[in-house]
Length: 434
Ligand code: EPU
Image 1 (cartoon, rainbow, N blue to C red):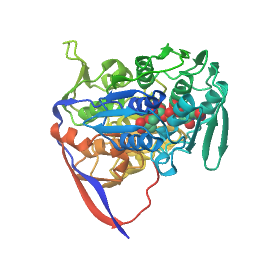
Image 2: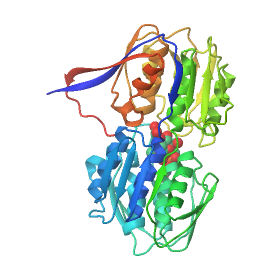
Image 3: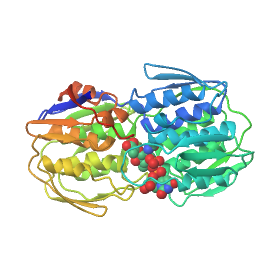
Image 4: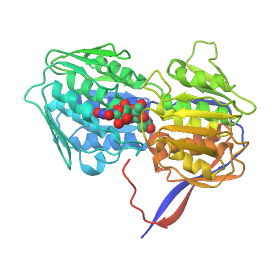
C-alpha cells in the first residue's frame, strides 16, 4: 500500500530578518486542556497553538464527553457530564500528555484509565513519580500491560516528595489534588513556566495553588471549581527555536509576544557564543536576536528549569555544529536525546557521543542532504541545520515537527527562509506513536 508523506525542502543560506510572533505554549496548553474537565462549567482557553498534539487533546476531551469547539487558537470546553473515564488506546498513543487525564479524571470522578502514553522516544520516561503522587493522595493505582488505572473512594491532601522534579508528575499531582479534601504539598516540584501557567489557570477556576515556580507547591483542596477564560503563555521552546534559527543564519529577528524571563538560560549561552540578545527596551514582551559571523564554541548541560532546557539542546547542538571550536554538551534529563546527531553527521557535522555527553567539533559549514526527524525537537534541529547548510536539505518524518510547531515553515519563510512543504508517495509505514 502507498501513502502520502509530507516533507520539508529547505534551500539553505538565507538570512532571517524581520518580526515574528511567538505562539501559545504547547506544554502549558496540554496541562491546561486536561484541567478543563475539573469543572462542569465552560472554560475558554485562548492562545492555543494549532498543532497535532492539541488536536489530539481535543479528540480525547470529546471522547470523555466534553462539548468542545476549537477554532482560531481558541478552545471552548464544557465538561458538564463525563460519559467515559478511559482514554482510548489510539488517542493515548498519540501523545505523552494523554496521561494528564489520569490526574484530571481522578480529581473529577475519582477514577481514570489511560493506556501507556506515546511521546517522543527520547528516553525511558518512567511514571513512578506520578504514581507516587496519586497514591499519596489515597488513590489505588493498578498497572498492567494495557496501561494505568487509578481509583479512589475519596482523595485526601498529603505531602508528596518527588525524587526528581518531574514536570509530568508535578502536573498530574496538582490535577488530582485541587479537589482533594485538605492540603497537599508537592516537595521538589518542577518549576517550569508551564507548571506556573497551570497553577494560574487552576486558580482562575477557583483553586488554591500557591508556590508554583518554587520547589514547594502548596494546594488547599476546594469542593468545586468553576469555568473561566484563560490565555496560555507564549511557547518557551518555540521562542527558543526561533532565537537559535535567527542566530544560525546571521539574522536580525524580533520575536514579539515572547517572555525574556523564560529564556534566560538560552540567552546566557547565545551571549557566550557571540550572539546579541536584547529586549526592545519598550517594556513590551519581545526579544531581538542579532548575529553575524561564526558562533564561538560553548559547553552546557541540560537541567530542569531554570537550567538549560533539554528541549532546546537539539536545536542548539545544530547551531554549535558550525561553531568555531569544540563544544561539550551533557544531556542530563533524557538518555536518548542525541539521535539527531546521526542525521547532522550526514550533513557534515562532526560529533562523538559517549553516554550522555556529546563532543561537537565545529565545522566550517554543513551540506544539505535528505535527513529524517526522529522526534519533535530533533526535527526542529534539522530544520535549523537546513537553514545554515549549503544547498538543499530535505527533512522527512515531519509529523513529529507538526506535533509541536504551528507550520514551522510559514513563520521561517515570513522571515526570509526558503522552505517548501511537499508531498511524496511512498510505501505505507506504521508510524510510531508520539
Ligand atoms: N521521570 C522518572 N519518573 C517519573 C517521571 C519522570 O524517572 O515518574 C524521569 C524521566 O524519565 C526523565 C526525567 O524524569 O528522565 C524528566 O521527566 P519529566 O517528567 O520532567 O518530563 P515529561 O513530563 O515526560 C515534559 C515535557 C517534555 C520536556 C520535559 C522536560 C510535556 C508534555 N512534555 O516531559 O517536552 O522535555 O518535560 O522539560 O510537557 C517536548 O516538548 O519536546 C518534550 C519532550
